[in-house]
Length: 369
Image 1 (cartoon, rainbow, N blue to C red):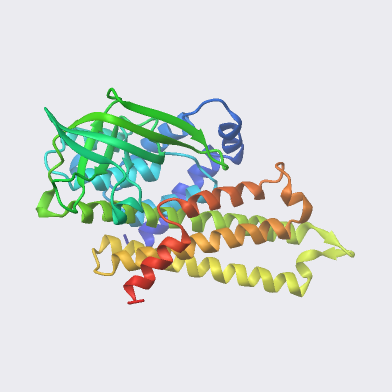
Image 2: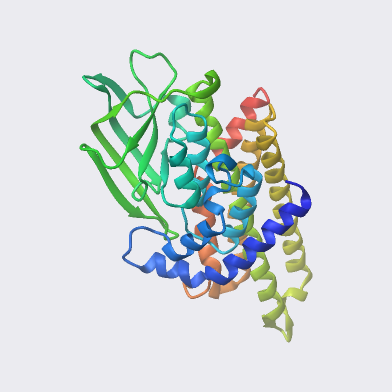
C-alpha cells in the first residue's frame, strides 16, 4: 500500500468507527450479560465494508491488503477501544488457513464475508517451549488432550486452529482444524478487566482426524510463528491507537482544567511530560510501521521487527495511559472518567501474544545475547 492508500483507509476507518462504535458500546458490552463480548451490528457493518476479508486473497473475495491494511484498521479500533474478532479472525485465521493445503476456498470466502470464523488457539509461549496440547494416535486419526487458556473468540468461532505435539512426531507440532464443538471439548468463557471475553478450552481426547498438510513444504512451526507475528503486529498497531487517543484526550483536559487561575497545561513541567509522551507514541508507531512493511515484504528480519514493535508498543501504551490517568488527577480514578478504560484496554493488549518481557527476550536473542 502506498501513502495515499493508507491515508484513505485510515480516514474511512476512523469515520466509520467514530460513528458506529462510541465508548458507550464498550461500557455496554463490559457491563452486559451477553458473553459474546462484541457488538454484532457493528461487526456486521464492518464486514460489509470488507474488513473481515482485508487479508484474504482476492480469489476468495478478500481485498488482500496484507498486515499493513489490517494494522491501519486495528490502530483506529484501538483509538475507540473496539471489542471485535477482527485480529483473531480476519487476520490470524486467514493467515493460518492460507498456508494449508486442501482448505476449501469457500471457507476463506465465508470468513471474508463474515459468515464464518476460526479461532487460532495457539499459546505463544507453548509454540517455543513445547505444546501443552498433546496429540495421540487413535483409531480414526489423532485425539487431542490438554488445556488452552484465554483463547480470544474461542467461544464464538465455528472452528479452532490448534497446534499439538505427538510423542512419535519429533519436535515439530502437528496442526489441526477442529470443527464445531466435538464431544470432549469444554469451553469456559470469562470476562477480562477491560470487558472483553476470552475462552478457556479443555480438550479431553477430542477426535481431530489427520493433521493439516502445509503448502510449499513449510514447517508447521514456521507457519504458526508467521500467524502469531501477524497478530502481534496488528495488536501493536491497536496499542498505538489506544495510546494516541488517550494522549489526545489528556491534552484536551490539560487545556480545560484550571488551577491558580490558568489552564494546568500552561505549566512547563506538564508541557515537558506531554512532549515526552508524544515522542514515545511516535517511536512506537514508527516501529510498528516498519514491522508491517517487513511482514508484507517477507523480509528476513520479520521476527525481529515484530518483536521490537510489540515490545515497544506494549510498553509505551501502558506508560502513556498510566501517565494520562495521573494527569487527570483524582477524577481519572473514577469509572465515570473514560481515561481508565484506555488504561485497562492497553494492559490487556500488552499481554496478548507476548508481554514486553517476552518480546524483549526475542530481541535480545536475535542480537546474540
